[in-house]
Length: 214
Figure 1 (tube, one colour):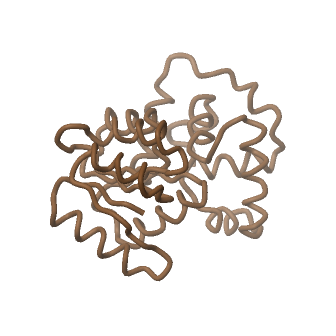
Figure 2: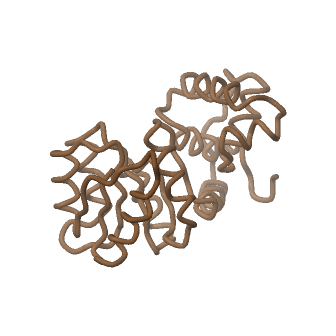
Figure 3: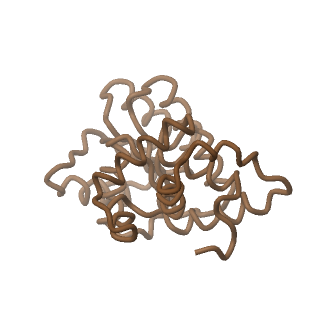
C-alpha cells in the first residue's frame, strides 16, 4: 500500500504502524496528491491510504484521479475531518473506505485489509451521518429495487448498512461469516452495485434504514 499525508511525522507514524503488520507492506509515501497519484500509477498498490487536506492536489481530487488512472488501486480516506462535505465528496470520488484519524491502529489496518479484498468500510460515525443525511431527503429513492431481495438478504443488507463486518453479522444472525459473505455477494449482484459501500448508500436512499431504528 501507499500512504499520503502532508504531515511528515503523521505519515511516517501511519506507515510504521501498518508496515509492522505481518500481512501488510507500505511500498511508498507521498506528501501531496500529485505524488500520491504518481505512486499509484507507477507502483499499482492494492490500497492507497489518503489524507484529504494536502497542498496542491487535495486528497479528494487525487482519489478521483487514481480511480481513472490506476483503477486497480482502492483508496481509503483517513482524515481528522469528519464533516459531511468531505465524507460525501470522498464517496463520490470513489473512495472504498473512510476513517477518522482518531481510529485505533488496529481499525486502520483492518480497513486496509477489507478494502484490499474488494469490500468497503466506513467509520461508524460516518455511517451515522449517512443515515441522517439520506433519511432527511424529502423523497427517498424508489424502494422497489429492494423487492428482489429475500427476507434474509434484506436482514443482511440492514446490518451491512449499519457498518457491521461479516463476522459481526454472523453473530447477530447466528450464521457463519462465509454464509454472510455469500449473501453479500448476491445482494451486490441483485442491486447492481460494486461493493458494500454502494449497497449501504442504496439502503439509506430507499429508506431501509431510518433514524432511531436499531
